[in-house]
Amino acid sequence: MNLSRLCVHTITTKPLSIEDAAKLYSRENIAGITVWRDALEGRDIRATGDMIRAEGLEIVSLCRGGFFPQLTAGARKDAIDDNLKAIEEAAALGAPMIVLVCGAAPGQFLETSREQIREGIAAIEPYAKAAGIKLAIEPLHPMYADTRSAINTLAQANDLAEALHSPWVGVAVDVYHLWWDPTLEQEIKRCGSNLFAFHICDWRVPTRDILLDRGLMGEGCIPIAEIRGWVQETGFNGFDEVEIFSTEYWSGDQALFLQKIKQAYLNL
Ligand code: ZN
Image (cartoon, rainbow, N blue to C red):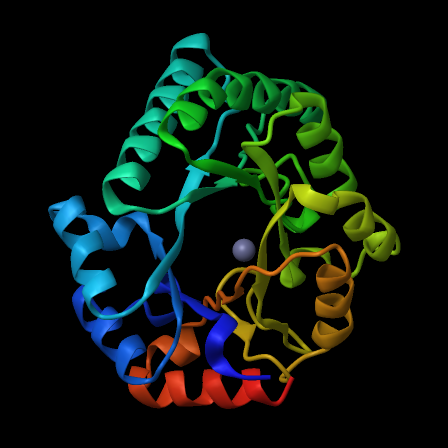
């Protein structure tokens, strides 16, 4: 392992501004950065992309689009408009991909939400294609099926990507969401060239919060190296993206945290 494929999500070092994060990642020889949209608030997005590249970082993706399922047609249209805005932001930033947290609407069947997700992605795909931006469907752990995503397994994400049948639509594999799935190895193999992104962190034992207690690689029970091996067998040669939401780590020194991330990554 070396650092040449290591990417860090801005949310991982949430207390830092995008400017400070880019400087710190660059100083620590991290190769890639995935930018969360909240980090861009109030910024000139094009200039921020230039600033990031001037620090020597490769922009891996923009997080996040999605949230297509809504109970009314008007709200579904608003969701599509927000995704079109995300495509414009990704293009301005110089990000080649948007990660989709697809959404779910309590009050309707998950199957209905899935249908609305399919319609939503189909509606934005021509714009993504025109802008040269890939769309990565990220399945989320079923504990988030209430409001965050009706796409909860890699099989569902693969089904959807295959149904949409576009070189601009693929999937993101996040070990935190998928490690428990007994069909994970076969579904990763099924992805083939549809595998667009690989996110890593660990599942703490016991986990203290279902959203904000992700661990560093090696701190939990996920067989990350094994899953990474399956991902690489597909021919994937993109980044290993560290995405950690952690109240504990956010409360500490972020430079120190980044050192720990590097060490945990090199120990994989
Ligand atoms: Zn993720």
